[in-house]
Image 1 (cartoon, one colour):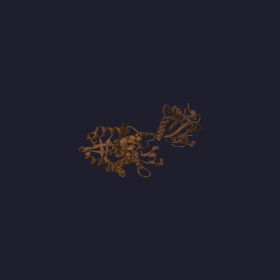
Image 2: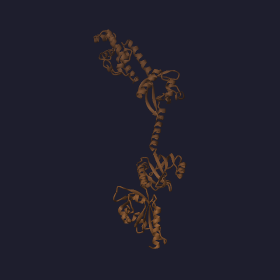
Image 3: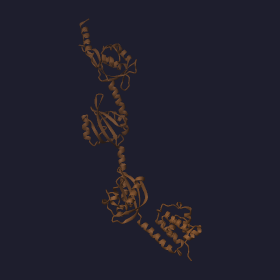
Image 4: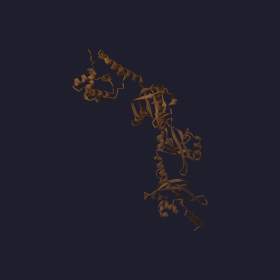
Length: 498
């Protein structure tokens, strides 16, 4: 054996001793791709017990192990790492998935780089493949990839070295309308996710430092024009041993549209509230404190807004009688609304007026309130009372009182009294209806008793019951009540005294 050959063998043995205990895998091969040796780490990464398990050369290696890139594209024979090294191609950080053809259910991920050792003349003498096991890293990255893509929260990832986007999830694409190609590879200057951010200077500073960017509102430009209000935040992370920034977003556009719609609705309500000629008051449903009143309410009661707003209904005392106030709000608490309830309102200065109040529950600025709408019916009630009094007076002597005049008076009362008492003709018994009909014919109690063949006391009892049910107090009022409802129209008579 020549001295040169001996020296080469000695050097190789020393090299093997040096690298045998390394955690990285090492494979040594001749320039013709004959596999000479592999350390324990390299054998373990391939699931074999000795160097023969790798194959005698590069060709046998390709037969025993199938290699794919991470995008699932298989490597051709001349693209295998050993073949590339033999062709003089020096590479680093090549990541491949390695699967034994005999056991395809096993797969490892290797990160490789090549090294060509030359002799004293500079000629290639030995090929070296250095492997590291990236299986766990790839598994974690795969889990992250799945989580990132499946996360409904919009997100993009940019590389800090050149500030270009390297990943985007479906949530971001759907929120903005961008395509994947319109995002990947573009820089943060082209697609500025910090556009009009409320603290943009701080965000840019944190981005340059690779530090966390706190949540802040921003306007994100859209590919078809316009913008979208979002909350953006940045979180630094490491991807493939590169420093990156994960930008995540929350779409505030639905909230902004809802706020605009609410503001417009409240503005319309406020204008309507102010301009309506009907006295209207809004109070807090919880403590009954007045929230707002319109001009019509102040005009009818004589109060000014400073004397009402912020004070409770009870403290102001404009509802005449505590019992009436409690009944009104008890109804509102139970039903949420009421319609057409009579109410006496005490004006500033203690004058009492008759009103009809309707109310409903509304929500103003997230606060439940009662909206009270009032109508002053004092004049109408006075007219009704005067009309009934006039009818009763003339009925004292009805000998000249024609049926036509009675009908005109009844019609006049009907016009002035659109809100009739909530009593139905069917609430009367058959006998009571007979009695009411004969009253409308102008018969006295004795005449009714004779007509119906009843005792006078029995007739008087029926008449009293009819008055009670109809909520009237006289014959004339009972006749008007029946006429308002079109009852006994053909039988209405006035007895002439001769």
